[in-house]
Length: 252
Length: 308
Image (cartoon, rainbow over the protein chains, first blue to last red):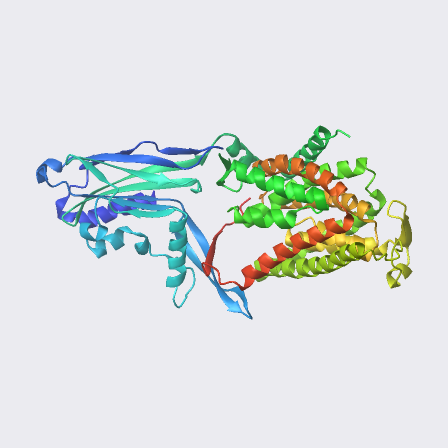
């Protein structure tokens, strides 16, 4: 909620005199709920929309669209290894606050061509502009934050595709966002920005939920709510499985 | 075919997990080791979070050990009296080990200490077993008959509180299996394994138990230690993934049954040399990882607050 309010404020500040923020952009997602069931292997969501004010700019000029999907924020403990007496040992660590567990950016062309660095920084568009801050004073947190970004990219939890937004005519656009199998559950937010000649014209946000469902959800809830019974059940299950296997194989 | 694991919160390939469970089960049946020292690193290598791998591995070991014990029990290869004495030491030891584990975790170097203790124990035990078993195989080939005593007598046999273990053909101090159980209990809590790879050689070389009884008795004791670990992890960290455990169990118990049959057909020294090789292999891999420059010097973990 706070983020949405913040975004509105940002819009008021940046669009200022143009005052076209309301209603010039209509967007939706193919689904606002991703169900993580026992056969979940990742999914793609289609994000699409229409630019209502397209007529003002003529057929050849549709402006630029940037889509940002942010996952729930986490606190991370980042450790660094160093060689001590021949073996690699975790020596230093820093704590990073408010690291998005998922972060995907899609645009129709290079971000640097769409708008200036200041605007991108303010809107936190682009993984290097997430402004990941350590909890305590650290001399140089950059290698730590770079490592987090690098590893999140390797796991497809962070992504940037600067040619993933497609225009249909000059008013309609679409893009698809990929959510890998290891996507964290929680409340997500999808932001769509419309730029024109480097100016932010309009922005839309929509909530997106990733939840566990089915048997997996039930097992997870049970393990969390009744840890004692869960532990005993797990042991009984194992004893039973061992006995069944032994009984099946009993030939001699 | 992918399967989503509810506690580990990742998707894994069904056949990869089944294959891993089967392979580890086969080895555990053959050698009477729980296989935890193989299973846990394998699971972590698959991308399963270490805490989940340790806790779920323990749960799976309960099933594998039960199935193994039943097979050995039917052959009369379980010394329940010895197992119970070991168990008493094991329960106290694992409680103490859990305390040490928590202490080391606060110190922030628990991963390194786990690796180092693996390398140390696997290296020493694997090395000793390998030398001994190769020597006895060579002696057998040369036709040298080493006059076999039932077991060696030394200072250990002078300790008080002597108990008779008929099945093991031993009359020794109860302090010996109690101490061994306690010591292995500590290690299994710290290293997240059943402890068979330490228990088996210790029973053979330290206590002089006959190899045939050692495996069944070790498995009997492992059931209780791993059940205890499963329960503790389920209560304190909620990291037992029943879905993963069930997949591992279903293939591991089958593997263990086949392994027990193969094991009973092999000679003791062949079995020991193979186990020694395997232990040394895992030890080498872990030692190599400690020395080798890692791909990424940085690693991160999510800080969670436990809210009740």
